[in-house]
Image 1 (cartoon, one colour):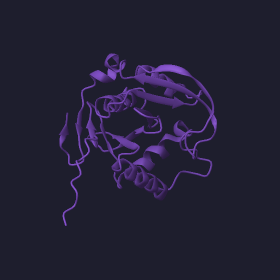
Image 2 (tube, rainbow, N blue to C red):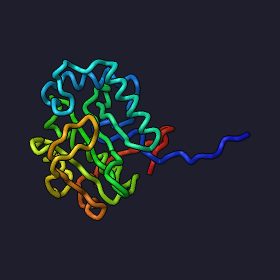
Image 3 (cartoon, rainbow, N blue to C red):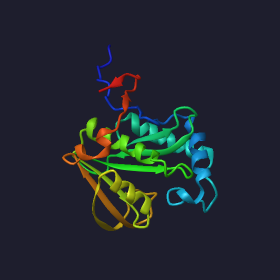
Length: 211
């Protein structure tokens, strides 16, 4: 008995920009992720609190295993951003499906010591371009804590509009309840953003170029 034919997803698994490789995470990236987080210290304390010490390699590996499973099932997609020459992990970004029908949520973090060079904006811009040109979303959202000025500034740089302060929200079980700032970008606004002009190449699961 033959297996049913299933069309291969056109989801980008790997993206190349001028200075970055942004791709689906692999098991060997657990050590790279741990190094990026550990070396960032308080810079990432909001996402990776160090009250009980640095996360172990096993914990990072478990996170990546869950991320990869979700990615392959066309659910939430988490990408790592790496230096093309060294393979050093610079940050993490993603497109989450909890934003509702026809929408996605953009997430991102970048390692300490590598900010201020435009690389984080380049990484996030690649996700904006992916969301509107491959996922064909109508809306893209960004949420951040009110005190996270760096993340809010990133959203504005990418062309997102501040919609308001959402009170007492918890978007995931591992988040603490808190107020959140909400930023959105619509498909009608996307062509006027810097991300729409970002030079990049996207490749599918088999390494074939998309677009």
